[in-house]
Image (tube, rainbow, N blue to C red; front, side, top):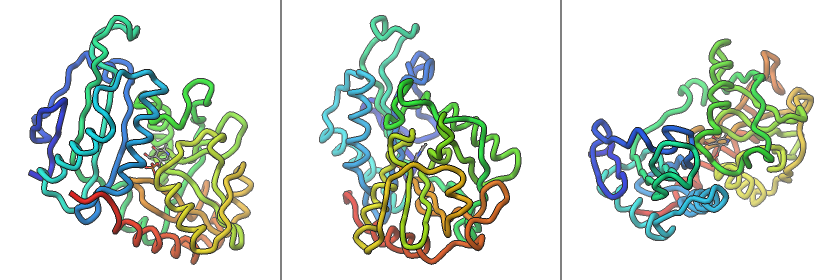
Amino acid sequence: MPKLVWLNGEISPLESAVTSVADHAHLYGDGLFEGIRIYGRKVFKLDEHLVRLYHGCAYLGFEMTMALDELKATLLDVCAKADINDGYIRLNVTRGTGLGLDPKSINRSPNIMIMINTLALYSAEAYESGLHVVSTSARVIPADSLDPRVKCIGRYASNILAKTEANRVGAGEGLMLNHQGQIAECTGDNIFLIKGKKILTPHPSCGILEGVTRNTVMKLAASAGYEVEETVLTPFDVFTCDEAFLTGTAAEVIAMVTLDGKPIGNGKPGPITKHVTELFREETKTGSAF
Ligand SMILES: Cc1ncc(COP(=O)(O)O)c(C=O)c1O
């Protein structure tokens, strides 16, 4: 049974899993999620994903009923039951069940879901020749409204808006800026620019999700001798850099070769992007076995 769902302790096939219509994420987007990859029967960077999830619970004030270690053990057990070699896990935690946005008036027992599935974000061709990206009009939600480090389900309405804008013009991804006009991220990926031997990426204060893949790539690149800097970037930096790539659990590492129809560097995936991709591929051999 490779595609299955564990929901509040019950396991069922993906097609028949159901959740309450009064779930607070269904009604208000009041939930958190993690997307996590399985490579070769190992869950990649599981601790990092769980720490981000529990930080989100603390920030939003969810009354989480499972300890991190208990959730980790349950997730690995569900992976073993799914008997899957490579796949994608969707882990959701919502505040609870009940109508009305006031948490005081609902059952504050979180609904916890582990879905074992597969996901391919971009075409095989895009991984070969790179992604064409367009700037979108949707700005990232500012940190004083909802801290972007929190992977909150409701926040994704604006990312979906940006994605549909990119889809309308046939682009592979949409770039989102913050309210200062600085580069934040794409709709489901962090962004990196390369200038000479230097690898640059927006600082978390620019309004990004601090991606697990981003942090992994930063460490791998630094260990390989590249200078890696978190900084403030604008569209000017994209048009004057040598290479660019995007990172994410679903996306993995993928070259970005144009922005708004203008080539980045020579318009092809560059040598440092290829090197970082190889380093990342090697790293995916590590993880929590099940
Ligand atoms: C908005 C956004 N930025 C960045 C990322 C990359 O984060 P991670 O590497 O943790 O998957 C994601 C992943 O879902 C995302 O949704």
